[in-house]
Image (cartoon, rainbow, N blue to C red):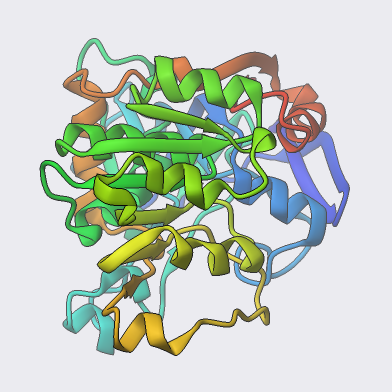
Length: 345
């Protein structure tokens, strides 16, 4: 029996084709995908590959999804056929050096899952055990599919330790930056969101409810604008980079006050580097934080935030397209014409 799926062959080469449907192994669950979302990581992978996510080709592609259980392998007792579920794209081993320190996102044996751009997907045993969740009644598949990307942001926000009244600046308002801004608002922060894309600037208001919105195309020295929103122009309490470019990382240090915090949340290309004035770190006591990925705890928190209605993730869906149009969806995402695109088989 075969299904339709997007397969990754090489940078810029993904194909919509027939793929054999494999039965789930022991402890695995097979899910019929009802909703899948485009992601910035998928765009990067499409353009240049990914040493962790794509270890051999052809490979499955896509990792944000929700669906219905259609088959279960032996020894699966917590899920049954017909269950509505959402899965994270990874699960920690629980036994390595980092897991024993409860740094599960840094697991040395992180089990990763790709293949959401398809009609069906088999969920590996470890993800079934630790990161497959039943979707609450009344919650749509398209909303539940946001649990994985939101989990990354929940992790980032919690580790940043945002306090009520903090002035938080977000640079880069793609889906991750927009969700970061929204969660910062829920923490009681005054949020300043900055970007260049008109669609995303609008969502900084309509979705994130940012207090101030800066169109970076209009300013040659945006750090002055950020500081103008702070007492006596001292600078932000927290500056968050959600772009993933070294040159933007460097500029974040000019936005914060003494004793402030810079969160470098956007992942840069491996091998790149930045220069920092050591005075800022020592004499001004500027703190640096950088948070990667998510954990089972934050995945569960993300689904709860969505189910409880605290975050209206559907506002981030710009377009809905058929699975066969996945390549065009990725290209539209890259061109900045969409924040998230919902793909359905």
